[in-house]
Image 1 (tube, rainbow, N blue to C red):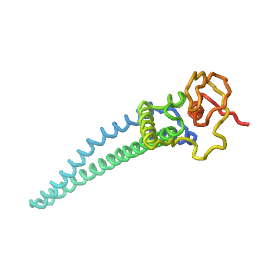
Image 2: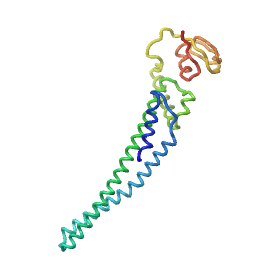
Image 3: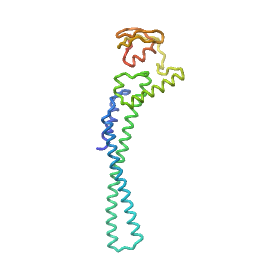
Image 4: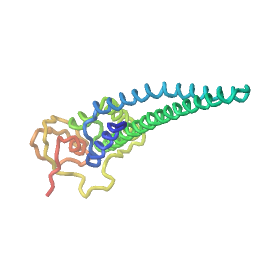
Length: 224
């Protein structure tokens, strides 16, 4: 059945949790593109045949109008026109099937790419400039480039405004939070101190300093 693979791509994305991504399905995506090429290869000769049939029908009608023909010749001409019209309709229906399948495949591919891009764009507001490895490995090379360009644009805009737009929209009750370091991050310069973020260390950090490490899975916030 035509366009079934394309619909599988959309269903695959729809089955993911909101805001989550599954691994980009390169294999299925390539199969849909291959199917599109097949439709195009079938569609082009069908369109040529349709044009040929239409021209032949016009020529026969013109000949009947311009020349006086016998009754036997008229019946023969009518029979030939019926054959041409049957062939024309067959080719038209075939072309329509391939055209609609191409359109459906295109819409499914665009839906798959667009909705994944929406999730990737939202990540730019949450993970600063570096994607966690478990998310990055799910992206295609084009999606990685898209995220890189989006983050660069966002950071350029924030620098121009001198305003950090990715922090919490609601002011926290306390600017400091208690965190546990999950990876050996090493010595880093934070907004108010230079800290050695060693694995398993528990410390109080400014929320704005800790957020990027929390979103990257290198820290966890301790509550209670």
